[in-house]
Amino acid sequence: MRVDIVTIFPEAFAPLDLSILGRARERGLLEIVVWDLREFTTDRHRQVDDSPYGGGAGMVMKPEPFLAAVDAIRAAAPATSPRIILTSPQGERLTHALARRLAGEAHLVILCGHYEGIDERVGEGLAAEEISIGDYVLTGGELPAMVIVDAVARFIPGVVGDAQSVEADSFAEGLLDYPQYTRPAEFRGMKVPEVLLSGDHETIRRWRRAQRLHRTLVRRPDLLRVEGLSAEDRRLLQEFGLDIEP
Image (cartoon, rainbow, N blue to C red; front, side, top):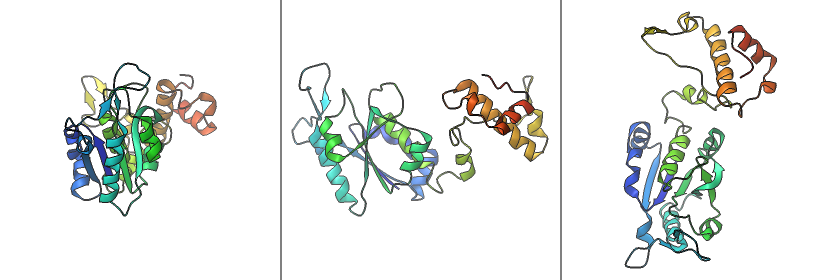
């Protein structure tokens, strides 16, 4: 997959050279190109924003640099038809399912907003898709862009060493993850649940499923309602002494 990112702060994307994403780039599984939006301005001050029509506080990012940047990206990768994304608090919320769908694209272009936002004609002219990472406002689109890249890259085959871990992650089935433990078996009086030390893989599987159900009911009831539990799920919760009602 190729990802192009357009931003006024290219240096903000240094973390994409690290850890799993850095190794994926080295192995050619993921290509990330960061473009400086100011390189596509035409005035000597390299201005990317202007005051809003109709008045109001703040500044609005101009359309010309963004469209020129996307033209350059398309020229650099003529064999692909990129999916254009705008980082925006007004966009569709990023979810596990959306990240999986985006991972099926060969080429993504992410445009990072700032100030009061981006001129509406950028989204219209590029048929762009707006994506939000949550119901809050940040100082710019760089952090959301990195979150999108990280979430999407996990679904690219080979990026994560153990593909099963991706399928078992929180939200993979609309459920939160089960509790995780490692050595030592006891630490400061806190013990690892006996079931995990039993070696009984089927019992462990059932315990983990029950924990995922219970944790989701308690912490994120918006994801799972009691009335949505199957008879088997109810039996699992009862088997391990977990309350059905959050």
